[in-house]
Length: 479
Image (cartoon, rainbow, N blue to C red; front, top):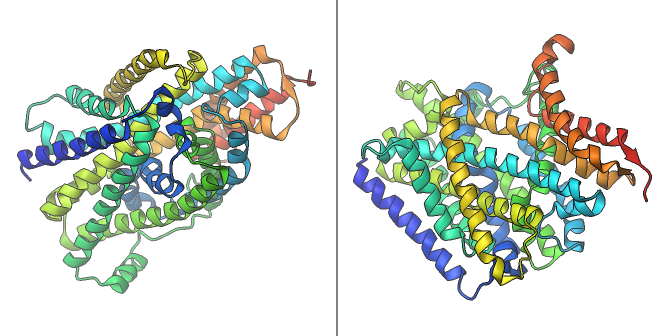
């Protein structure tokens, strides 16, 4: 695949996103950036959220991980779907009733100003890490496909891609993202379907033959009942519930998009529909992952050592030019559908919670744009740093980081929702800082202290529990 063709496709793709940004920002004001004036159709939000929730991490890492962990990721997805139901039933009615823009404002109402700022701080750290990890994957693929041949350094590639995101999001914000995410989801799913079709044609599989080949392969194992394993099925389901409630329900990024729906009922229908589509999409990714390894085995193809490189290597070299081009579009769309909404959510959280910007005040627009630009630059520096230290599958890195940074959010919201106690507010930030540190210490020594038990993604549950117990320790009666 020539570098010139790759460049043409990427320029056309981003031109389309910028065009959507132009049409969605006509007759908009500062408030549109934060809430889309609460006019988003629920079905558009539900479909677009697939791209945001899956991101480049799922697009690249999940198919590659099948080679080492089979389908043991599927119970985590089941837990995710249960978590979405919890969000629809418990959290969405609360956030809609209070008409929130930043969901961490509820922590301020419940516990006080320090709680609101602490919640927003942990969200900002979580999003910077998570979004940077996701974009790191895409930049690596683009570097391999075009920018290396053009002699463009990795750091320059990073800031070019972030500049393009900034251009189409700085005005319309969440309103633009609802529409661009829909387009990006289409590209991502098209890339996966074309890859599956290309493999089936090469191996002469019909649908039944494909299913049989996956079932008979060593890559279709779902259940892991070893209680000490980090991929234990029960732990995966519980972790999936906790991760979804924390990453989606207690996350400004995902909730800001949901809260643009017209009514609570629309938002709940959106969440139920999305959870069903989310399960089917992950099933498709896992099936594709198994097929990638089956294809390589049958054709005698040597695969890269890093599992994150398997999908990219085969798509760009063995499935033809059309599939290769759609792979590039798919991975770019998968990452940008996550990164653009992350930047918007980061801008919203910092502007509302720390700067106390009034969305209806048009004079605050310049400050909001400056915050948006600052987070774009900060994310670029984090990606460059991550390239120097990354050595394992990015999906594991992202979810482990989430376990430590979202735990305090899970603990604070749980304590606020399920107890009627107040807390001694001056100690609350220290409890939220201490719980991840204790969780990390326990994780490092769990095999020695807990009879060989190894923590996986359920470290988030432990982290949230430690924060909950800490808040219980500093509780006081309601004033």
